[in-house]
Image (cartoon, rainbow, N blue to C red; front, side, top):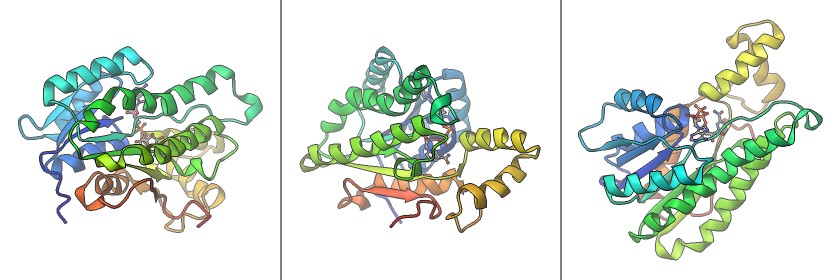
Length: 266
Ligand code: NAD
């Protein structure tokens, strides 16, 4: 299936790891020019080499999405390198603190919201002029199952991701008439460094290894993932790439779950 995005220019945040990296790979394979960004240049360059892209098709600029200056500088680099973007995928994020409400400090709340919600706002503020420039655009936010099915041991993350969902839905009304469509992908339990860390912490608590932690986490904590396994970053990237494509031309303000059925409601 041709996604018809050859020649489109895409910025992917959180692109040196997990879902962001898989999305960068997928968009490159579809012929898009991709700009990867993440917090550290060294890791980004290593990831870029791994993608082995044709000359001129891949760029990698580091930026910290908690810093307005850093994100503004990124927008200038992107403009100079590729002349602007048509596609924005916001995958950067952190899990934030684990624990019940009474164990979580205000500083932890602020940091989690700053990366996961305000980070996405900052990136969009910097890139909206470029996205509105061409009369065709796609924005895909990466939210989470937690946005609609909050777990009480990760509330800052849940609240930030619910904010992302609301932001995306609202934005989908603002620029659709200009051809700029906004959607959200909400994954659950995808095998990336983020869930590796979660499972390693659980393994330590239970005195088992990562596989043991996953085997008990699924029935105990994510009982509706009937597939009985973690998803892969490629499975999330495939849906993101579709929403970035020409094929999704009548999809706007939607939230696509890539969660193996984890969210219990319709
Ligand atoms: P990951 O940890 O592999 O990737 C996240 C990336 O975000 C990292 O490369 C990290 O460096 C980057 N990042 C963090 N803080 C940053 C900052 N201040 N500036 C720039 N970049 C920053 O995790 P992932 O699982 O690929 O997560 C991708 C997205 O998917 C995240 O938004 C996450 O919340 C969401 N998500 C993941 C899962 C899952 O099961 N893995 C489930 C639901 C939602």
